[in-house]
Image (cartoon, rainbow, N blue to C red; front, top):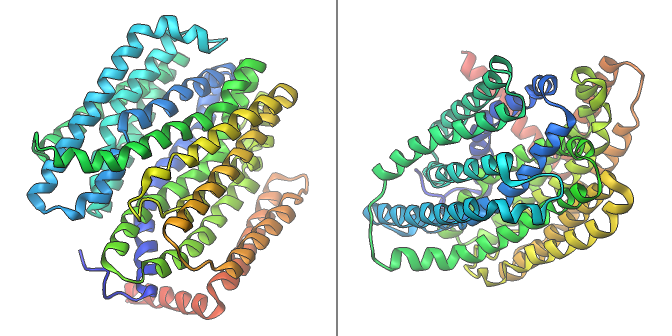
Length: 494
């Protein structure tokens, strides 16, 4: 891989977005396939079933950061600070810690689950669905370090092939069990469990071949010192992210919880684009900071550029999901859309944190990192406690948005204190104003015809994107990039 030291800011921008695009092609195929299969799930599962699925995800959200201990982040942060052989010792040490921790915790939950879960949840016992979710989360933990290695090495082709193959396998297993064996909700859970078990074997073999076992304390101490505050933060963040569903389970039916979870699934489909960006952004940023002296300037510029680009899929999902749901959905799912724009907004706010909220890790001072999820957890608990009993699903959605806003704000403030960078206030102001106006006007489009709505909204999104790019990137840069793309296309054809 070429060094970042001699690249211009423009070349770095192109490098970041080209890497994001390469990751995005595979991840978009994965997510779009999952998204398009939702109507097939609707035919075999009820809103109550989706409520159970949404509730079981509460367990996964809490357990995954505990299982991983944030070690994939530590691996990305320290990988390039070791020589080739030492990198294998680092991978081996982190693999032992991750697998050992997740196994011990899973066995403890399996032993105490029957007594513990009735004390926490009103409508569901531990068996069978929480139990299946537990072991699915355990086996999924095997994927995090290998996928982090592919990202570190910028092996986008391998990353994409594995992601696509894995997702197609999971979807295939679930559909076979739903339609072929008519297992209903259990088929959904067993399909996911069998899939993660099979891939755990594959990832385990990969880790064995790419690591070396060691008892040297150095390979454990520094990464764990770095990652444990992040893991604690991730657990608290997960808790803050499930407060809406937890309180909704206490105050509403499984049917309402199921529709809320489906609205979350549609709105959170935007998070795919945030994950695509994050997949390329974090290793790119660590390497840029390690190799260049103008890291703060590059961080400030590319942060606003990235959030600008991410605004377009956010607008598309927030505005066009209504037509998708109306076209494919059954009547009992018609009111899902009311939740979608709010979930898109919450997830878009988290994109700000992903882009701008890097600073504690860059300065290697993660001791203040728990302040982010602590503030989010407190906000989530208080807002859900107040709003959900009164407003039900919409109250839970409001609590989600408020929590996302507080979490992102605190993370950005701490990041800028730990790792100062230029503010770019004028660009941020233009971005927020244009996106807000674009959504508000696009939301009012209604002709009574699904196709006409889709065409008009799509045209409006394109127009908003054009205005946004010219305002933030600058007209000259946009024209220059368009000309470069056109020239590359003509070269390819010739």
